[in-house]
Image (cartoon, rainbow, N blue to C red; front, top):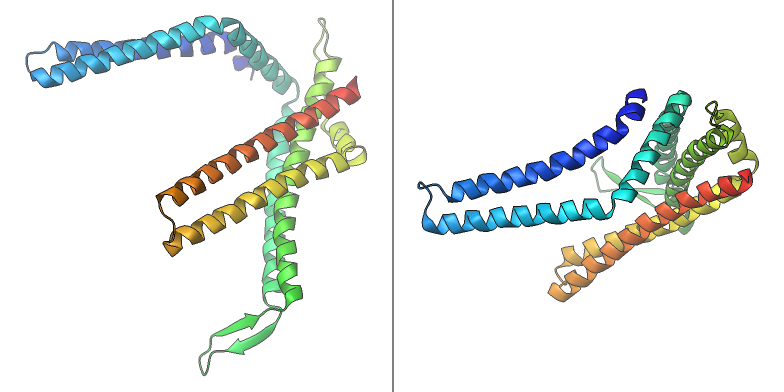
Length: 271
């Protein structure tokens, strides 16, 4: 992290320069290939076209870099600040690991509960074979749906808690920093804020993520059934693809807006 803090600006600008130079070199190699006598006349034209395309793309990238130079400088400053925060609060790196362990533990518990729910019902044996099926009642079906919603909701809630703790620690570090000394952030204090003051906020945000995720699951299941049934023509397939793309965009947008909402809640509280 200290290396990233010290070399962030150099690394980012070297990446841009290397990208521009690499594309220009590729274009030059293609153009030199087109001038070779070993290449057919038709292939020479193709090599020249690809070389011109590479140079044109390279020029566009170069112009974009010049136009967003101030934004790149801002990005560099953000990367340096993130490196300083992580270097000052190394324990924050363990938050995702702990949340992964908790999530895996809950999934194991959920699988055990699901197996128990699956075994509820009347067992019907297939003739004299050792195989049998379980006939579910309506209450068992509803319990299975409850289990599915609970899985998605609690996993989304644990992710929200992780995002909140990291964001709250970063806010504490930022507002306690000064020109003379660096700041500090407490993970325990961030966890206390999440449990004591913002449990409802995190639960509501994860509920929205859960609803969108379940809608996507249902749509993808229906899409798969329609495609397997062979009833989908080209127009239907196009509509299903567009619907799947839109739902994916909505899901990514909801994840982005909930994460930033948690940050805004912490920032407003700190003010």
